[in-house]
Image (cartoon, rainbow, N blue to C red; front, side):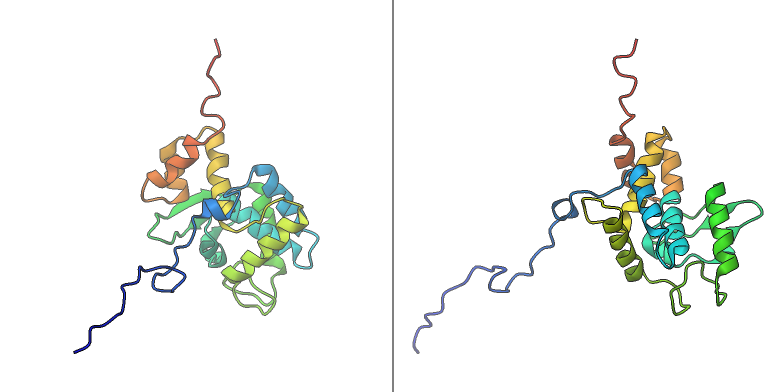
Length: 207
């Protein structure tokens, strides 16, 4: 029997014998969170759109409550208590639910949105076709808002959740309170905000 002359070939992505690994977000994006000023620029940029009130309210609510995009688009009116000014947050990824206070500007924006919503829907944020807003739709809207706000980097929805974490950490809130607010089961997911907080060393060198 003739000997085979086949040679072993090392697995490579070029030969498609190995699935290429996705590069980490840190390598793909120059930024993973927004500052409060940048969030405000996004809010103002969307207000001039045809559905500007809805879009700006989505950004504001996602940021204030550190919502993931799926939590935002699934938000229902029965989660909002206008009398007590509270939001009942239902977390995904086995996150812990929480009840958040709603600030005055949010409350006014949500009341107006509910009043003007046609046709009425159990969902807070609806599309042009009156269905619930999609995660892809919000991602596209955020990207457009970043361009309109003249931000120098590409904007994506999860930046709002990170912006919330960093903003609250910079205000001096402790890690445990942040963990509960963001619905993290593992506190290690929360530690990044306090470790990178700009106020962490604020009292160094003060007499």
